[in-house]
Image (cartoon, rainbow, N blue to C red):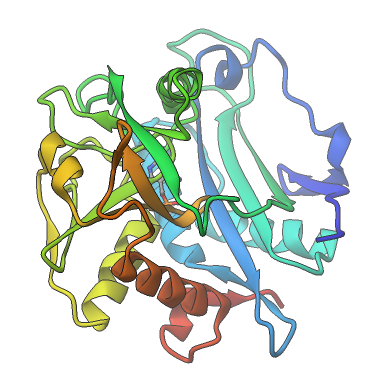
Amino acid sequence: MAWTAHTIIQNGRAIPFEDARIHPLSVGLAYGAAVFEGIRAYINPATGRLSVFRLEEHLIRLDQGIKFMRFDDPPSRDVLRQGVMDAIMANAPDDDCYIRLQVHIESRGSMATTGTVGWVCAAIPRERSTKRESGLAAGVSSWVRISDNTMPARIKATANYHAGRIATQQAKADGYDTPILLTREGKVSETAGACLFMVRDGVVITPARDSDILESVTRDTVLELARENGFTTQERRADRTELYVADEVFVCGTGQELLPVTSIDRLAVGDGKPGVITLRLQAAYESVVRGTTDAHAAWRTPVA
Ligand code: PMP
């Protein structure tokens, strides 16, 4: 992974990466009026070509966020799609890349202001988690997941990550790799940056969409792959204690990809090693994102 990002796209213009600017008093920064997507593009080992994974689904979710934020005159989906392609091509990466696409209020003002909407798209290198094989040590957080009627997790707003960051910092201080957050009702929600799955008696279970989760693209992908691999799946509310008695637990998201969880609150998950179903789904995910299978070609947008 030798490449570095030297160019960034800001409001449709390619500029040197370090020259991107936003005023500190912009509503986007001062009041957290910003939504974003984290997207990955993967190299196919046979062709050496990059393709973006599930770009359209990310753009649709971003549109939902833009609508919810009541942004005036936002960039269209076509403009943002082109921005993603431009950000990648301008940097000519020779390896996988991570793309951050963000739409924010650029002008100064108050909470009541909508103002000028700006956007930025960066394509940068991002190492994979070092815990892909060994698995994560997770701790159930004393911080509670943001809830739909205060700060909806369904909307991928940058401000949500204030709550995620508090829980992550606490988890790290307590010696864990990641927090697991519960809803106000005490049901399992997700981590600060990934969705959560567990396996019980061969059934692949993930908290339902009304569990204050981000409606994750990877979660949807994993559910589909699990079904294709012959597993029964359930999207339902899940109790905290199910985490301790589950045979396997894993997390998934664009950034973290698919990572085993091998302990929770210092109790081993299963036998304390990544589970067989987890590893099977991790391999299935790897081949679908990279296109080493012909299946789901529509999920991969080639970088022209
Ligand atoms: N939950 C949270 C809180 C996240 O930040 C992310 C990463 N965007 C995910 C889940 C996974 O979402 P996706 O699969 O769409 O990347």
